[in-house]
Image (cartoon, rainbow, N blue to C red; front, top):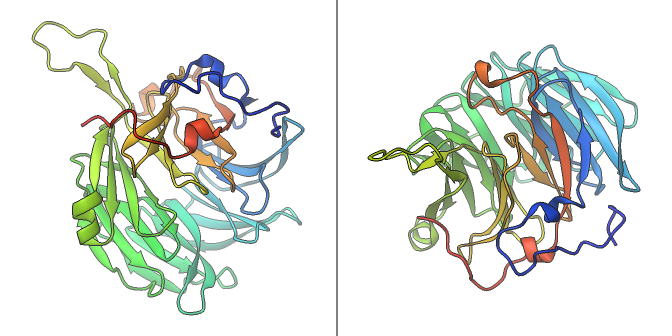
Length: 368
């Protein structure tokens, strides 16, 4: 039995494509924020505790008990909040946003404090362990073209590193930190030597980088772009030559295609990529409102889910991969005019099954 109060059995275990029945066991949180959801992060110590950042300027902490999601606490920024993550011991939540501030929230005392700032909005942050002593700190990436390391006890950054362009996305696993910026630059940092960029490159994808996500092993990363394409990359160049590749996803057949038209499909951005913490498979979520589970080692899709009536700006697994949380919310890929007053704003909690997320023999190949 799962925390959803029923067994995690998929109704379409023999099919790569799921149906709406496979979504029936999900917990739905309606109106979890007053504006678009920007990020979701699970506690590193509890399976069903997670934080949500929003364009309404707030970070909310939700708890799921007996299949019911309840708001536990919240705190505010002076502008839209773009990112949130939990400390390694699960006692604190960090966030950054368009007020240029980096804030830290103590879960036990419900007190927040500003621990740092940038010269422009803070787009991404992670709790990392740096240097030979594995000292825990927060690393933040900003549109001011820098990343900064904070030790949480002093207002000045421990170190500031210039990036090639504005930071759009960032992730880390083990000692690997990968930063994706504007103009398709990728910066790789070895956290054993955190103040130096180990390697820079450009994304192999032709269009703007939307998200990067590191493998559990810390030896590579996936890139998602605005043109519905995902790249599988490795730090070691020889491994990259052997195992690196890219594939198309989050595209739909164009119903308005005319004779002689080249636009046979509608292309959507890949907004979020998350790797399963146990199996190392991964999920992509996009502007088409769908999410898909993939196996990079066997190069095939494990399970695809039907598109919802709203884009998915972010998704994330809990600490053991038994739950995938995803938001149905405006992702801004159509600009300000696309943010209709009636646009959905929902968080859904999907109980994963081994049929969906565990590596298996190759069945369906990636699109080229």
